Length: 560
Ligand SMILES: [Zn+2]
Image (cartoon, rainbow, N blue to C red; front, top):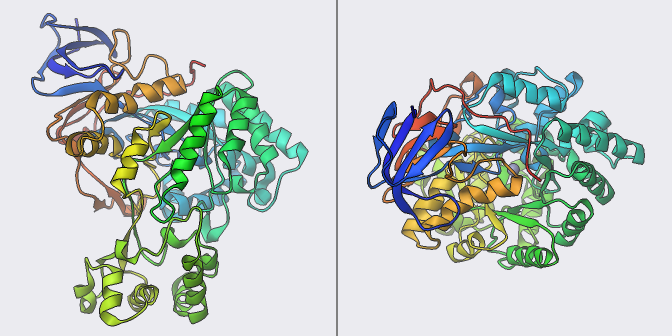
């Protein structure tokens, strides 16, 4: 007998094919049959007339590596239609990790994950040292979604170089030790190798993430080690200094696909991202598989000056990194510091997260009642009204409020004409949710619902079957995930039932459910009627089913 029958649904099968109305039956976690009018004998029958049924969303860019050790439901993703998460992006992993490196690994993560050291200390369950042991812990702990895990360059580097990992290049001997660990991790079931060369990626106190210290030779050696057994995807969040040509070379020498993040549109340098995409196209024409990770969400960050992620990548911000409280306030009030920041912002840059677009920086929430009239106003507007410099306005307000003022900055990817082109590019993948990271800054875990609602329905920038393909089978094929990403008989019953007329993501809101009650940003689903992972329902119209069995599969075997 079938466990579940979904009748009269508009079936979007994930291949990009036109939808058909039909029934889909699930048995023992798999899609058992698909047809015009299947016998109504299942244990549970849902009449889905007017609703659409698609394969569950595969989120190819998450950072759940730490969170999953205390939250196997990887909130908020399952309620937002995600049934498979790829973890370890950018190489921000917690395995392999020796006990003596745990503290430094958490310190590295605080900044990039947007979680305090206290949250990570209370939250992470350290029952492993090697990557294989980490996978064993994940398997034993279970998860609400299917998982594929990258082995992370920064963790591998810390394992071999210890405290020197964020300080210097590696020796030839150290590179071969790292390569051996990457080979072991691939044998244990890693989906690939992930790294970052982005100047925006810093640990506590502005210390660069370890992979940023790697030479080109080190990157190449590790990618070749990854590909040696004939599998693996190499993913890298590249800094402006890392040319696509170098990544094409790595793909050629390893014979493996390369995923390139983070291709975001920068209004101050609007052609840069298209130059990268052109180079990616050219590489594909030469027979390589290069894919650009693009985002369908504007990069909008909430921040306080106590931990201002948008500006921390500025060279001139260095004096403010690693200092706290009164000392930090003194730096922020210093005229020489402010002048240096202004000078840097006035100079052109290839890639810069924050570009002094003060009309796109708003005061969200003040700490003191006397400043309430400033809420919801842009820094540009306040500065113009007062005849002051905008940087001074923002920093003076923050310092006066003990750095408790919350600002929001719309940084990148807000030019919808440009972003629409990027989403439709033949060699891009809709990704970059960063779910599990930057938790106090933004939450794009609902990116898939945003693609379906905003880009398909509201803007008409993409057709629904193509959007579904880009959220499902495109990733499954790239990563070689067996029997996922399509509605096909015998495939895993990873399903998203939704209403195309209302699907989307709700407004962001702050919740306090991290270890120790620390806050994070989240969004709710709109128009979602049900989410199933391997046939087990994990969410309904009201969100996550908190007591759902953990039915996700930890994937360790991938088709080449
Ligand atoms: Zn990332």
